[in-house]
Each structure stands twice: as C-alpha cells, then as structure tokens.
Length: 146
Image 1 (cartoon, rainbow, N blue to C red):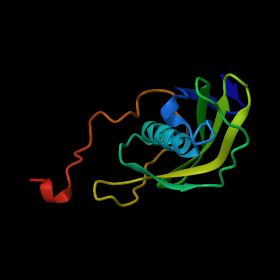
Image 2: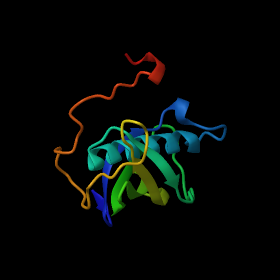
Image 3: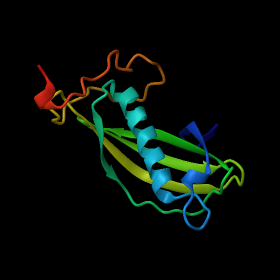
C-alpha cells in the first residue's frame, strides 16, 4: 500500500503497555517504533549497520490510536547526502483510516568503524537486499576489544 511515495513496511498492534494515561497510544512508544523502523531502513539503504539518527523535524500528532488498533508506519528516502540519508515518515491508523502523524525529515548519518561520519556512495533507493550488511557488528565496548 502506498500514500504518495511512501510504502508501508511495518504494522504494529497497539497493546496495553503502549497506552498513556488517557488510554490512547503513548507518543513515546510510537516515536521509538518510528526510530527503529527508520534505523532498519537506513541500514538497508546505506548497506551499513552503523547508521545513527541525527535529526527529526517537527512532529505533529493529528490523531491517535486505542488499544487493539492496528497502525502502519511507512518511510521513503527523500535525499542522499555524502554521509547521510534523509527520509520522510508517515503513520496511519488502519482501523480509523486516519493519519496519526507525518515527519517530513528524519536524517541518519552513515558511520565508519570509529564512529565518524563516512561517505556511503549511494544516490538511489534500493528495494533489493544487495545492501543488507553481511555480518553483525562487533558491539563490544572499546575497552573489551582484544
């Protein structure tokens, strides 16, 4: 399914632990889900498991979801910088068919092994799995490495 250029990749079921004191979806839970989905999208687009969130533009919640609702989250790349990837996010409620929020600009930065911004060399969106990293990162703290 698409809205504009966004392809909806992830669906979530709103559960009791996702609710705020008003009985609606807690914004912090939704933002965590968006950031995780954006990180996965950036890793696939940049071919590097070391991509981090740099920036999120204004977030305007226009509707919500309740326990038991299903929501969809979608992302699309809008710009490839030398070391960054900018994307747009949209979340909608599948039950009410209303938009929950749109984030016009989420920027991820591609990092090298030392945690510094690094050129990634890509200029186009891919839907192939050819950029998925072929190995896991060594996530030991620097003092723990041999």
